[in-house]
Image (cartoon, rainbow, N blue to C red; front, top):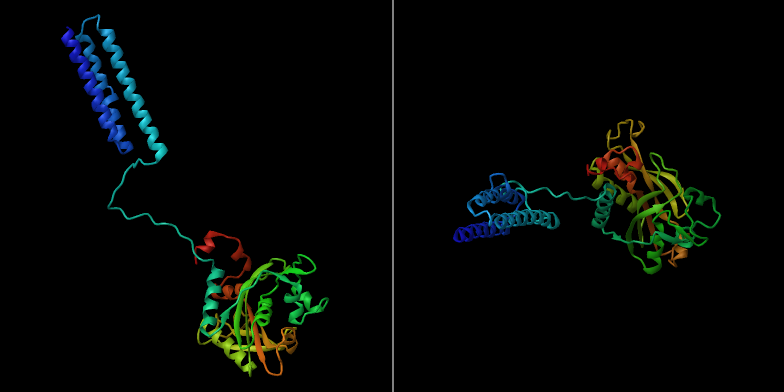
Length: 342
């Protein structure tokens, strides 16, 4: 029976060798499961080897039994380790159909306020304005005094402010950028200053302590109020359509004289009167005016030679009109159900 014993041991060795060859080529969990069934199921190749024990002498059966148990354990351990390697590397592919379309990658988009900001900047750049930017932390001098708003003047009450110290403040408008630009450059100047601003406003449907502005400035010889009206009208019609009209109403700002509030004809009712415009046919936008000669004094411009106009607008206000949003707070809630619409 010695010859029979060697034959059986050879069969067991060949089965073990074939198993490990198959296992080395297993690329997926499905492959691994197929091998497990083939070798370890009740009718599998390893289990069938146990029937060979009865074909050897009784003295050799413990040896064959021990070898079979070793092989069975080696096969089980190898399958378990392969399963763990799939989990560690993440390389196992459950199923792949190359004919299926690819998975859509979820990508973000610009915030609606930034989309409007970019559109506004594009319009003014197209009219020959340069973009100038400044710091959000400003000196009291540039934020107020150089704009003809002295300390303790009542006009500061309109811009109740976040002070960092007696000297520094979170800017309440982007007008300080105009002062910095005029300090650094000589006329002619044609620029806009977009950016974020801060005021101690109580949040409600139309107010936010954080907001965005675009302010414009043009300084040169012979600049008139007619030039200001032409620029604002061109902007309004480029943004909302050729049928939009603009009107100016007298107002007061410390840094412009004369000063005005400007309105656009209602884009919803075409000036006929509706709930949005409160039946007036007009939508209030912001303020503008001719640069006060006193401001030129702070930047060493000769007011007898140069004149200029300035204007501003709130990006949130423009966005609310453009997208028909009735509460400014929605822009800052980061609700994806709202943001994904843009």
